[in-house]
Image 1 (cartoon, one colour):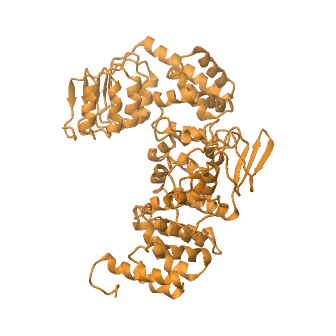
Image 2: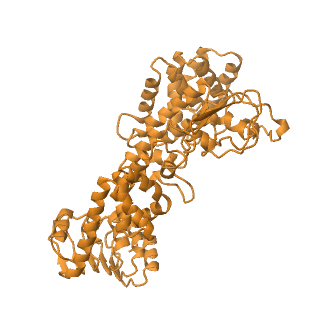
Image 3: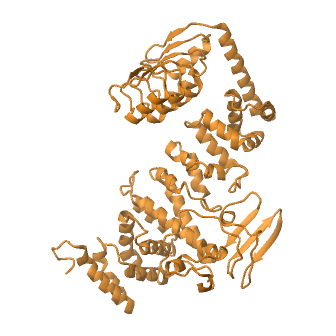
Length: 570
């Protein structure tokens, strides 16, 4: 009746589902599950039905009902669900279904094929809700592996007890051993993991092994009270601490399988190019477990797209990101800084070769940078050379220490000698003088400009026109070596935001800048607010917005001649 009724009302389809849920509570048969399959093609199962589905996945993971009936239901949930917080049993059912797939003979291969089916065969997934829903399911499952451990250690009510109104210590039941995927659906776990208090812990079934300075001290808590300041907090338990050589939480076998399954799914998600930017954004504020998800971070560090590897940095000031966590001495560094070095390399290769980025490294990570440079890491050697070249380090003793570090390796010595040669050439350039005006022929490239500027003396060059050439942001490396430059014409070039950011930090005397018909956006134009000498600025036919234009007018007091035609600010 529900399938053939011409009336379009959700309650018509939900009524038989609730009837079936009542019948399943009394007698569970496969025939009932198969009978309601057509209704589930366009409707989410109600909570009671989800509970039955969860039970079936746990008790009979290899039955054909899981594949034939549950698969399209889970696919619909992942494609169309908007908020697991409103119906947590849908999330729990999805977790149980994935674990049931993992119990089949092919195991994770079946799970991998399911994830691939959700993405689709093309390079772009057509369903925008699939990725955030899969990530929510994975994080909830991973959190459930540690939930009982967390609740027992901080002596606080569990999520279920809070939901039932049990807040008093004497109202609480003794903590149970860690169990996963209980019949009762848990509420959604927090997005971030908070440190635990050091209050005494109740009896617990989890074994925590600590080894400090090669001396192992095993703490077994089975039926006895234990606690104290020497206990590790949650971040210590989930991340590798530099003060602890081996630190692990021994979970039950079932918990370990769950953790491995869903951590591997996150690894799978990171292998899809179109999903990686959103995945990096979703996971940016999450502190990662010790080893299981390090592969995901490495994938982010290898991705050349700025929207991906920029998520390696902290989400806001005062909160550590993966860049800080995996630096030498960070709580998660277990590879002598190799991952940290690869992060710095990709960030420097993007648009982060700026004084601001170098200043942050000098203030917070100079020690790790010098240590890795001492071990011959080329990226860190380049970082130290740039710090010297851009006068980032003011303290003379620190400068001498950096020079000694550079001279201690062959690659460092070679790059330091090249730096000294560039400094001598710059001084010679300023001494010799040269022309004051220069115009490059149309169709000239970055290489042509570099070849020209290296062939003569341009210390007095004040006016440079690159209009209608093929130069890009890469030529900014050459332009910042012109100390007397006051007028720069970049009309109809491919000069972009990255180049503008570099110019704004080094060409403080620039007075006239023509950016007409260039691909610059607000991201680069905002950097011009530090160029206080600008008096003429052409942004005709760029992606300038009205807000950025107002901001520039407020911050550039000498700006008198402005062209914003054919922009949003016009």
